Amino acid sequence: MNRENINNALLFIGLILLQIIVLNNINFLGYINPYFYIFFIFLYPLKKDDASILILSFFLGLCIDIFSDSGGINAAASLFIAFIRIPVLQSVVGKRDIDYGAMTIFKLPFPKMFLYVVILTFAHHFIVFGMEYFKWSKFGIILLNTLLTSIFTIILTMISLTFIMSKR
Image (cartoon, rainbow, N blue to C red):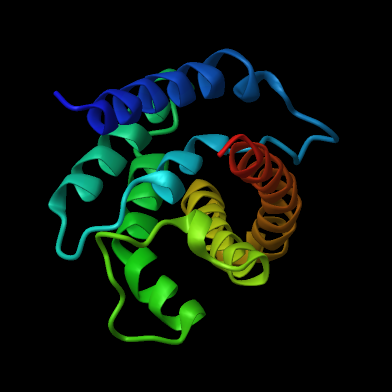
């Protein structure tokens, strides 16, 4: 196992533990419960046609579902954003051909990094809350939960990314 695989495994386990032990117990104003575990999907190295991110994202979400008793909604949402992350990155960067071996989220300018995180976070949270409520009559609550939780998750993510970039 090389250093990158060890770091990814530690990040995977650490984010699951952080989400389960700390963040799942935050319920600010009844709406805000950050889903910071998706940070793993943002940091996972980009590789074109890489099935490992899809498998890892599914198991990441499944672990959260098992401990949150949420019936697979986190697994579905995590798998979805792992699937769309490269097309979203291509749209944000404005290029079709990206050097996947050299490209990381840290090499993006801050506005593009922010937009990438915002799009994937909103997509994830909308799927989570859409599947949780699963009624058209609850669409307002779905949007409110998506908005408030996404703001909190994005703030945590951007603080973490800034902290990691300052260490590099």
